[in-house]
Image (cartoon, rainbow, N blue to C red):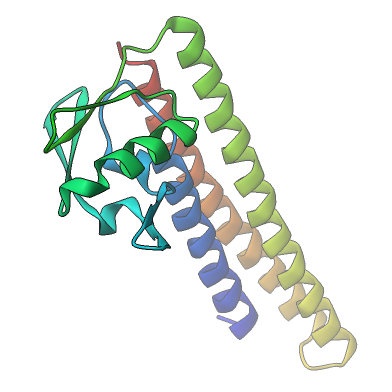
Length: 184
């Protein structure tokens, strides 16, 4: 297989991984620590990720518990969570901050499914752009007589097959996330 196709395949695989990473931040009805990944806390004069100032656990299916290593960090943690826009209200008992994940309404679930579909489409476009770049590179190689016309058509076909594989992976991951979001 051509170096161009191998490189294209690697870039597509990275796109699928990035897609999975983005989807992990989409809130579902269940507690997931990954929804807190983007939250930063002002601690000791600098900004730090939430998971570096507290232990994050899921004691129940609809609750996340944050146990700060320093109890004085509770107010900044609460402030950061409230500012995050996740719509979660922190409750603290002096030692642990608890986040109750509310049941999603039907409308909210549908909005989240739309969001998942939008993210999936963005990544489909990204994968197609990777394919286009690879095919452009192959056409340049043909123009420079590095590959024959027959090789060009064969490699374009290979590029399309790889693209189809990665698009299918995206669709499977997307369908799985949509199903997870729609669960009551």
